Image (cartoon, rainbow, N blue to C red; front, side, top):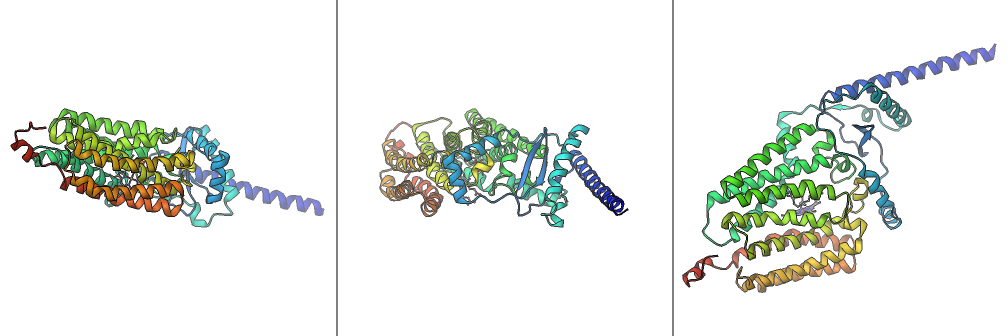
Length: 435
Ligand code: HEM
Ligand SMILES: CC(C)=CCC/C(C)=C/CC/C(C)=C/COP(=O)(O)OP(=O)(O)O
């Protein structure tokens, strides 16, 4: 008799838990269907990282508490190659599909249910009540400018436009304001086109990095379709403005710049640490474009200016990436600071010294007066000294000092170039041929 009662009690308990499981499955199914109907669903970022996981071809966002990596564990990983294994594991993920209206078929729904319910039930005890709920996030029009600014990496875009204007101002010849304005607007539009495409490709990886997990596409604040449409609406007028408003060489250079950043540098970030060399070319082209806008041709001075920007980016980024080396393996990024730390330090020093050489070459190419290398030698030797400190002893202090030095070194160097620019008028008066 007693056994039968116990049996009945456990049977009703089992029925209850099955019912709970069914309820959570239905709730999940509703969520998924509304999500696949293109609804802008976003998970409010919780303190745990949001994984964008690929479940049998359909991407969905789930919150899974992730153990924060500690420096020692990452260093161990780096030494034992586990970091590389983590990078390989992340490589297989593909970017989100454009059409968010694709409906996962019934089989995927059921499979997803199984996976999610298992994880859900396993972790349900750990998450607080509000973390379990999906936060419906509609795209509000007044949020759009901020979202598009983040999508365009507006600060970096402004800096790239400023180096373009430096290239224009340093070029020989008369000052043409309409040409300058067209060049700057075209360059800004090109950067506003390239950065959203870069972020579209990097959603599954950025979601695993502390520095990028709150980006609009990762948080679902804007749909991939809208982001790529925005990029297209910037790219077409940007390239057209430069090609027909300035000169065809400009149009070709900016189209190449966008291609190099989105189709070469971006995918290469997850394939080889050589990506930084590609990124340095991407960042060196804008001032070359500014010079080309003013002169319509590529001269020695153009490549000197491009060379200065190219070399400057290594101490800038290698120092920064040393501090981010814990973040890169979960995102699947192959950076020198993770894969070849010695090379990372050596390259930063090498290109710091290259800046000394390039500054000295400026008057030799008739680009500036000899005042430039005499004055700029100090700041270029200083960044080289910090590069040497980073090379001999890479730690948080030396890497941060080198990175922050790079942030004032570039604008100061460009300012010195401008003030010590070779006075073209004087040369022309002496019957020198116009450059
Ligand atoms: C290889 C090329 C480059 C790479 C890989 C790179 C990467 C980065 C990264 C990851 C950051 C940190 C961003 C953040 O944490 O929000 C950063 C910051 C910065 N970058 Fe670069 N960058 C490159 C080229 C450039 C160029 C060409 C410029 C200027 C024209 C530039 C100027 C800056 C500035 C000023 C900051 C600090 C911005 C801030 O503190 O919010 N970088 N860079
Ligand atoms: C005009 C034009 C086409 C510009 C291209 C974009 C641009 C401003 C490039 C600057 C150099 C660069 C590689 C930045 C890092 O990008 P990242 O994607 O590694 O930065 P992240 O780590 O923040 O994602």
